[in-house]
Length: 268
Image 1 (cartoon, rainbow, N blue to C red):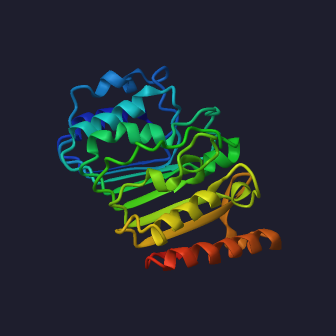
Image 2: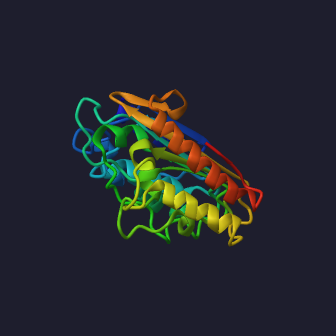
Image 3: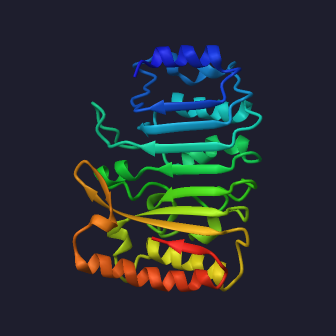
C-alpha cells in the first residue's frame, strides 16, 4: 500500500469523510514511512466520520501511527457509529509477531463510547497462523461505558479464559447489546476439563441471560466455530472429524436450552 498517498488523501479529505475503508493494508511502519508517525494526524479532524473499516489488514503493536490515526478519528468525530477490523495472515513480506489486540482497538475508540453502535474485531486468521492465543483479552471495564453498542463481534482470543485472570464474557458486555457474534477457535472449543475456554464463557453468558435475567436487550447470539488451515480458515460445517462435530452439537443443545428461557435466538 502507498502509505504516503493514503496519509495525504486523509489529510485533504478528513473534514468531509464519512466512511473509510482500508483494504489489504499492512506494515504501517513509522520507520519505513515517516509520514505515518503519530504526530502526522495531530491537527487533522474527522467531524463527519461514521464508519471505519479495516479489511484484511495487519498492524504491529509497535507501529504507533495506525493507532494514533484511529484514536484521532474517534476523538474528533461527532458521530462515529461503526468500527470493523478483519485481520489478515501473519506473513505480509515480513512477519508481524505481535499484532494489535482487541483491547488496543477499544482503548483507541473510547472517545466514541457514546456514539458507537457496531464493534467487530476478527483476528482469527492471524491467531491461527502464529497461535497467538495468549494475547491480552478485554477486561471487565473495557466495554461497560460504550452505552450505545448494539452489535458486538469478537473472536475467542479477545473474550475468553485463555488467561487465568480473564473476566467472563458476561462481565464484558454492555447492557445495550442486542446482537452478539463470537468466533471460536476449534482447539479451544473442544478442549475438555480444566482451563475453562470459550465454551465455559458462552455457557456462563447463556446462564446470565436465561436464568439470571441480565442483558434484557439481547436478541441474538451467533457462534461461529472455525478450524484452521495452513493459509486460512473454514467453517465447522465443512470440517472432518465426527468427534468434533458431535461435541459442537452437544454444546449447541445445552446452550440453546438456556437461551430459550429468555427468548434469545442462539445459533451455531
